[in-house]
Length: 438
Figure 1 (cartoon, rainbow, N blue to C red):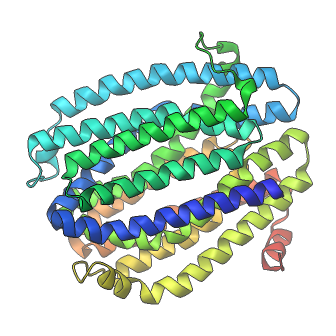
Figure 2 (cartoon, one colour; figure 1 turned 120 degrees about the vertical axis):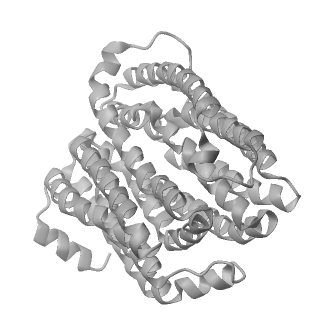
Figure 3 (cartoon, one colour; figure 1 turned 180 degrees about the vertical axis):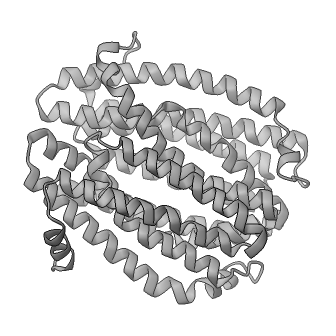
C-alpha cells in the first residue's frame, strides 16, 4: 500500500504541475507568437505523435511480463528480456529516423494544413527537432518497464514526471525570452534528451541487476510477446487518433484558429485526466504482481478502489468545471478564445465517461489480456474522427466535443464486464463497493 500511495502521490503531483504549466503556457504562447503561429505550432506538434507508436507496444507488454517474472522469482529471465527489448528498440528507432526524415522531406505539410505564417524552412526544422524528441522518447520507453519490474516504480515515476515538467515548461519559457518556434523546438529536444539520460542513470543505479548490455535479442523470450505487443500498440494509436487526430481534423476542416479554441477547451477539460492517469499507473504493477502470485482477492480490491477513486474525481470535475469552463477560458486567454458550451460539455462528458473504463482497463493491460480492448478502442477512435469530419462543417466546432462521447460509451460496455470477470468480481458487489466508504 505504501508503494501505491507513494507512486500515486508522485504522479498526481507531477500531473498537477504539468497541467498547471500547460494552462499557463496557452496565454503565454498566444501573446508571444500570436493566434495563427500558435495554431500552426499545435498542428506540427500533433504530426510526429504517431511515430511514438512504432515501438509496437513491446515496452509496456515486456514490463508486465517482467513484473510477473520477478514475482515468480525469475529475475535473471526478466533481465534478459529487458536487454532484448532494448535491442529491438534500437532497431525500431533507426527505422523511425529514416522514415521520419523521408516524410519531412517529401510530404507537402504546409499545403495540407494551410500553414502560412511558418516558412518552409521553419516547418522542416520544427518537424526534424520533433522527430529527435520522438526517437529519444522511444529509447526511454523501456525505462518504465525496468523500474516497474525492479520494485522501484515510484522512483521511475518521479524521473518521468520531472522530465515531463521540464518539457512542458521549456517552450513557454523560451517564448518569453523571445525564441521563435524553431528555437523552442530545439530547446524541447535538448530537454527531452537530458531527462532521458538522467533517467537511465537512475534506473541502473537503483535496479543494478538489469545490467544494460547490447547483444542480439533473445527471440525465444520475445516471440510470445509479439502478439500482445502489437495489440497493445493499438492503445496509444487510439489515443493519438482521438487526441492528435482530432486536432488535425479540426485544423484541416476549420483552420488553425479553431485548433486554438479546441485545444484550449480540451486542456481545461482534461485536468482530471491527469489524476486518473496517476491512479491507473500506480496500481498497474500491483495488479501484475497480484496475478503473478495468484492473489485474485487483492487484484479485486485494487480494481474496486481504483475505479471508485477515478469516478469520484470525475463527478467532482463535472460539478466544478461544467458551469465555469467557458468563462474561465475566456478570462484565462485574455478574451482571445471564446469556447462554445456545447463543445465544452462534450469534452468534459467524455472525460467523465473515460474515468470508468480507462481505470478498469488496467486489469486487462496489467495481465497482457488487452488485445480485443485495444482493437475496439482503435476502431472507436477512427469512427469518432469520421463522425467529426462529417459533422464539423455542419455544426461547427461543437461537433468535435460531442463526437468524442461515442468512443467512451462503446468502451464502457466492453472493458468493465471483462475486467470484473478477470478479478472474479460480481457486478452487483462491484457497484456496492463503489458506493461504499473507502
